[in-house]
Image (cartoon, rainbow, N blue to C red; front, side, top):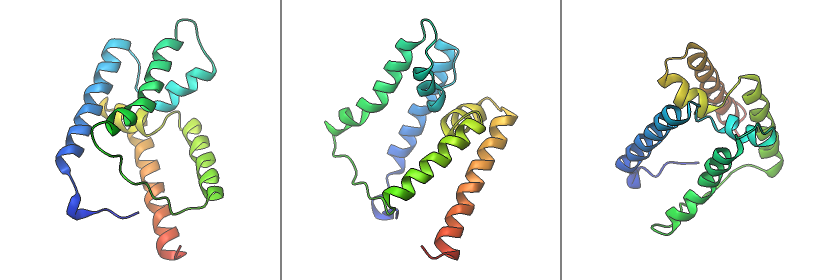
Length: 144
């Protein structure tokens, strides 16, 4: 993956970040819940009473949003430089680590750090550091 610095759009990235922050703040203020994707989607598989509607709406919003965006502007081209097997293994590792760490990047990284949660700060440092280390090993030491 490479970044096209000539067409980098910091204003749209800033606007997206602001929208995510406002959405996460409104979600906790109005629902009293953290906008962590794994917790929201995980709750779909073990439903509690009166808990499905907002989870389904949130998940549908994640799916429908790119389709709405596509009505205004073409979606960016996606290129993945990994085999399906490697993606499956990576997905299983991420899924396991998410459950082990009691949350994901959205729950810990966006919402937890905003709440100054020590657990979320440590979790975010751990998964960001692991990601950096993995990329360094795979790209620079193994030459893949």
